[in-house]
Image (cartoon, rainbow, N blue to C red; front, side):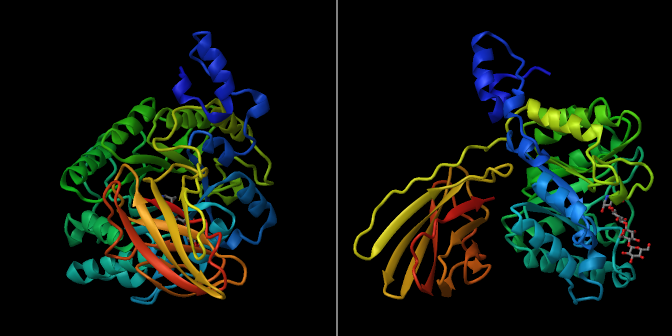
Length: 467
Ligand code: G3I
């Protein structure tokens, strides 16, 4: 693979400059600057490196140590599925899903939501429904779960495994499909309405090369894009044996060319060629600018659903395998930079009068691909013991469908009221997300929300993430 200066990781920039001046095109990261964990290595090109997590293992210290050290994206292996979240109709249980989500967010990781609708792992009551009754239950499920996690999910697998294996290229028969062919787009629209900031993905397996099944999905995505059905990404599970298909990268690229992100969502590879195959998959993602990240489906071989096949990056004792090293080296060798990635810049644009302070923070993330750009600025009216903050959210060069602003309240400060935004809490780090009527902001335009509080409102440092 030839890498140009444009495609080199930040860790290799100095080397890049020298190589470019010599007319060289192959860029290698210097070992001195190479990242030493999967997440950090992926972040060099604006990507994430994630894993599936089981709530029941969060008290296993070996497991948690590897999770916290290596990965910057988390998928709940089972805990956000329909049978886990709505075991009885209309009664929602988020305990284990929340454990995983909170562990991730509290440790600076993001979360892929998995999965809102799937023909498997449905609660018994849903399996027994049909027709409009089932359709209503499906849409209510999507709305309720996406609303519960609103503003906290990087990307949702809205629909999982809806296409048939084999040569048909058509939909899989299921109770979901029998409610009408439009069930997938209805689910995507419901998810967008419930959580405008989350990327919305279609996720499937046996789609890792160009074949009838992946082409059926490709045609659906193309149709959705043409008709304005909200879809942002396609997940390729990549449960592989020995190797990826030879057209793996080309397949990712053809989907990316439709205008969606692509993600490798459940990677595990068995067989004696494991280390080479992991490197090849890594390089393929790195070569596709809209391949925003890779998730492996478990941490240690003993955590894998593929019992006895040892398809993961750590052995059952938690030691790094050869496959781990090949992935880390491939990530450190660099690739295309994910579109939209940039470094963080912070500017303070105005100073203090007697009672009014205005601060603007231009934000981006160092923890993976950057969603649509936005900035947030706060105008503060304060008095002894209290304040009113007005926050202005401004879209970058692309329109926003939703936004999330994070503020840092000083110790002793409490929010006592707010308007035109949802909030995650009243003290400390507070996330603010758009309400129904102010999520859509045209390029370069602004919207406002506000809050009042007791204590001091200085140093709020608002940062904005849009979608
Ligand atoms: O938690 C119960 C436990 O109480 C009980 O004793 C035990 C008895 O079998 O079952 C346990 O639940 C199992 C659960 O995993 C947690 O371990 C289920 O039986 C088992 O079916 C379930 O398997 C999951 C599988 O999806 C279900 O189809 C795997 O963990 C999970 O890795 C797998 O993940 C899927 C993705 O969601 C979609 N793509 C394919 C992938 C692999 O099948």
